[in-house]
Every structure is written in C-alpha cells, then in structure tokens.
Length: 570
Ligand SMILES: *[C@@H]1O[C@H](CO)[C@@H](O)[C@H](O)[C@H]1NC(C)=O
Ligand SMILES: *[C@@H]1O[C@H](CO)[C@@H](O)[C@H](O)[C@H]1NC(C)=O
Ligand SMILES: *[C@@H]1O[C@H](CO)[C@@H](O)[C@H](O)[C@H]1NC(C)=O
Ligand SMILES: *[C@@H]1O[C@H](CO)[C@@H](O)[C@H](O)[C@H]1NC(C)=O
Ligand SMILES: *[C@@H]1O[C@H](CO)[C@@H](O)[C@H](O)[C@H]1NC(C)=O
Ligand SMILES: *[C@@H]1O[C@H](CO)[C@@H](O)[C@H](O)[C@H]1NC(C)=O
Ligand SMILES: *[C@@H]1O[C@H](CO)[C@@H](O)[C@H](O)[C@H]1NC(C)=O
Ligand SMILES: [Cu+2]
Image 1 (spheres, protein in one colour):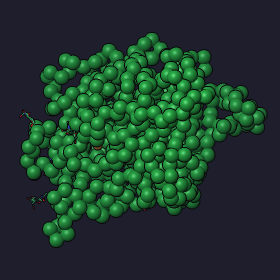
Image 2 (tube, rainbow, N blue to C red; image 1 turned 120 degrees about the vertical axis):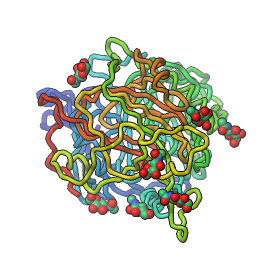
Image 3 (cartoon, helix red, strand yellow; image 1 turned 180 degrees about the vertical axis):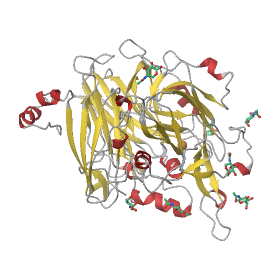
Image 4 (cartoon, rainbow, N blue to C red; image 1 turned 180 degrees about the horizontal axis):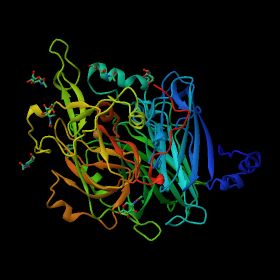
C-alpha cells in the first residue's frame, strides 16, 4: 500500500500492487518506500483518551511487507517533541550499521522537526521481524511488524496458510510512558508498570470500556492461518495460548524452525514467532489470552490477563468460551519445556552454518546490581539503594555522541576498547548466598573489537547477584545459533559435550534462563558497530548492554558502507 518506486511508470504499477518493476529490477532490487511521521496522537483505552507517541497516528504502527532480499527506504519525520530513532529489529543490515537505529550507538537521535532516511537491505531473514523506537522508552508505543515473504518463485517450508494475522503484544499506561525512565532514575527504584497489556493495541474483555474494542481474528472453519506474533512489551516475557486450539511453531526471529506443536508459547520481549493455527474446532468464539511469565523473586510486574477473540465466520450460538490454560506466572519449567523444542530446519534450502571450530571464546555474566545512595537521602530501590545492571560487571554508560561516528571518524574519548572477554572475578555465579561486595558494578562505555569473520562462541551466564531473572538478550546486526543451554554455572568441560551443532535454532533474541546459561555461536561476518543488550527495558536502562565493533574485512565487499549524508548530528 505504502510501497512505491521512484519513476512515474513504476508508481502506476505500484498503485496496482505490483512493485516488482522495471526500474526496481534495474537496480537489481525491489524497493519499498515508506513514510513514517512520528507524532503524538490521541488514543482511547481504559475509559480515557490520552496522547501517545505514534507512527502515522497508529498504535501499533504500520506493518511493513517485503520479500527476502528486497530493499526498504523509510523516511522518518519527527513531528513530536521528543528525540526519536528507529531500529529494524532482527534485520542484519549487512555492512550498514548507519541504519540500525540505537541512539548514541549507531546514530544521534532525530531531533524534533528533523528527518532521517533509513535504508534497509533485507538479506538472510525470512518470516516475522519488527521495528521499534530505540531511544528512551519510546518503543512502548512506537513499534510495528515487518513481514518478510519468501523470494518470488520460492515457498514457505510449511503448508500454505489461507491468510495471516500479525499479533502484537503491547502495553497501555495511564501515565506518560516517556517520563518513566526519568522518574525511575530519580528514585532509583523500579520503573512504573503498565496498567494493561494489549493485543494489537486492545486490552480486551476484562478491562473497563474495552470489551467492544477487543481484537477479533476472523477465521473460516477448516482453513489454516499463519499468526505472526511479536512481543513488543517493555519488561515482561509472556505465556500465550488460544483455548481449544493447538499452535504449531514454524519460525522465530525471522528464521524458520522445524515445526512443533504446543498448547502455549513463551515469548520474551524482542522475540517474534511464526505460528500455524488450524481453525478445526466447531464454529464459535474462542478466547486468545496472554499473561506474564515472571519468575524473578521480588520484581513488580503487571499481573493482568490480556485477551482477544478467535472468531469463526458463520452462524452459531455465541457463548463465551473459557480462558485457555496458561502456565502460572512463575512456572520456569513451562518456559524451559517450550524453549528446548527449538531446532532450525538445517535443510538444503535453509542450511545451518554453525561454526564448528571456534577462535574467539567469550563468557558474559548478566547481573542486576545495587548502588549505594547517601544515608541522608536513601533511594527507593531495595535496602534504600538504587538499581543498576551490568554485563561482565560493567554497567554501560551511554555516550554523548554515537560510537559508530566516533569509530568511523576516529573521534577520541568516546569509548574504550577494553570490554572484558570473561568475568573480571570468577565466583559461584548462581549461588544462593553471594557476598555483598559483588553487588556494586563498575561503569564504562566499553566495546569489544572482533576480527572480521572470526568464529565466536559466547556464553551468557545469568547471575544471582541481586536477583536472578530470565534475560532475553538481543544482538544487533547478527543472528546466532543457540547451541546449548542449562541451569547453574556453565561448565566448560562438560557442557560443550551436549551442544547441538547439527540443527540448533537460529535466533536474534535468546532467553537466558533464570540462574542459567546459554551458549551461542556466530561468524562475525558483518562489519560495524553492534549493540548487545537485554531486551527487558528496565535492565537496558540500568546498564545491561555492551557493544561489539566488528572490523572491516580485506575486500571492498566486506567493509562498512559510507555514511548517509543526512545522518543526524548531536
Ligand atoms: C540518573 O541519576 C543519576 C544520579 O542519581 C545521574 O547521575 C544520572 O545522570 C541520571 N541519568 C539519567 C539518564 O538521567
Ligand atoms: C509459584 O507461586 C506459587 C504461588 O505464589 C507458590 O506457591 C510457588 O511456590 C511458586 N513456585 C516457584 C517455583 O517459585
Ligand atoms: C555501600 O554501603 C555499605 C553499607 O553502608 C558499605 O558496607 C559498602 O562498602 C558500600 N559500598 C560501596 C561500593 O561504597
Ligand atoms: C554454587 O551455588 C549453588 C547454589 O547455592 C550450590 O548448589 C553449588 O554447590 C555451588 N557451587 C560451588 C562450586 O560451590
Ligand atoms: C564489580 O566491580 C566492582 C568495582 O571494581 C567491585 O567492587 C565488585 O566486586 C565487582 N563485582 C563483581 C561481581 O565482579
Ligand atoms: C567466514 O569464514 C568461514 C570459514 O573460514 C567461511 O566458510 C565463510 O565463507 C567466511 N565468510 C565470509 C563472509 O567471508
Ligand atoms: C536530543 O538529542 C540531542 C542531541 O543528541 C541532545 O542534545 C538532547 O539532550 C536530546 N534531548 C533529550 C530530551 O534527550
Ligand atoms: Cu535482563
């Protein structure tokens, strides 16, 4: 719909819906143009109207559609009173970190009244990914789906669905979400939690003034549907189910999976899942529902249930269905059982290129920390202290100008290159009793420099420093293979013996289990500046992130592309 191509003749074709055009193929690519206007717009939920930050006035924002290998050009106009940046979550952005989006990592923010054009080349990804703001807490309302179809002439590796539905899990706050991080930083305590979860923008049946607006997924009996489910929630992993219907997972994070059938999903912030649904029950109106999976002790979270309807077309006696059985909030086992079924296709058309020999071994601890406040002015975090978080005991300090510019133009004093390859102190990471002197992290804007196309094994080790949690870690610019996971401390002698190097799942956001570890492998074949962070927003805000700089290779095709001329300045 919003796609158009540069030349007039092509525009006409585009209106008719065929943007597979002469000009586009002359560039060797199909190009999709989009215009994003970021502005505050009024929306009504929970019996009240308020202004929220949106793209083109929509919440959730527009769905972008393309085929594998296409190009998307997105002009972003900032007509809001806040800074903004947009991240294309799950897209590799080959050699083009300039369009990746995280503020002060790969760009300065687009300031009010300014514009910036993102150029996104789709490459290896196929399936559902998404876009979201990557500054402050703007992503709470500024997000939308990206659907990448197979290339022309190739097909889904699963039975063709009759139709598809994007399902975006989001949240609603009665207060202004843009003020949350600032206020939380003033108190040092937990950020405000949401008043409702949403499915495609709607809180659903159990909320005041929301019954009528509930999202309805209309289906025909006997048909098959593809759900493209995205967790755009700030802080909560979710259990998701549809009453009396099984779900077949066929893809995740823009990569296909060996299909498996399940009664429920566990989806972390940042993840997206492609799920087949057979409308094979007697015609009726069935509840779709989701609620938090939150097993960290003591952490506050939104305990409500969001619902939508799976509604069969035709006539039937409409009686309200029961709710689906969702696992209890703290059922770690349910999350584990679900995750361990992930396998990549590892087929001829979708091979698993897992590094079998590793030359770069990394071990990163993920910790939630506490900082002292003065005794006269205690903070609102636990024990009168303030929250922080860290990777390898470094709590990330966001610089004033972006790391990519500083690296590319050789501006000194912005970052240091000494991010540790392993934890600076070895301790029993998952012990029930850790000494208090481990609580306080150190601080810095530290990056780790990787040689071009080195083969990396990275172990994420959850710790029990303040409290353990499931940390969904997201790596920009890359996908990786999840070759192993477990509870307790990673054992470098025993655990690698159980790795799956044949058909491990390919992901871009992986949930590191509470008091456990995950092992990932990837080729560092994408030069640039790439952020790695926990996708639980409060953890990111507190400092649970680090940055990789992947060096250029020897050939022109293995170097970072030139910066765009409209790059925002700080
Ligand atoms: C958060 O508060 C601390 C003081 O407690 C201050 O040093 C820091 O700059 C603040 N950070 C942000 C992002 O406002
Ligand atoms: C989960 O919560 C229930 C109810 O609060 C509690 O009884 C149970 O012990 C908890 N389970 C775990 C594994 O923490
Ligand atoms: C924090 O305060 C505690 C108790 O007052 C003290 O023992 C500890 O040394 C302080 N830690 C730091 C890093 O200042
Ligand atoms: C580490 O802590 C866990 C949990 O408290 C305990 O079960 C385990 O024995 C400890 N490991 C070592 C090597 O001390
Ligand atoms: C982190 O670094 C701080 C400051 O050097 C130190 O006090 C603390 O013990 C370290 N914690 C861990 C878990 O290594
Ligand atoms: C990276 O190295 C591997 C192993 O040497 C090789 O198979 C692969 O083609 C290389 N990738 C690139 C992009 O150079
Ligand atoms: C917006 O970005 C500019 C440039 O980096 C910065 O100076 C300004 O403080 C930012 N504004 C806010 C409200 O963060
Ligand atoms: Cu986290």
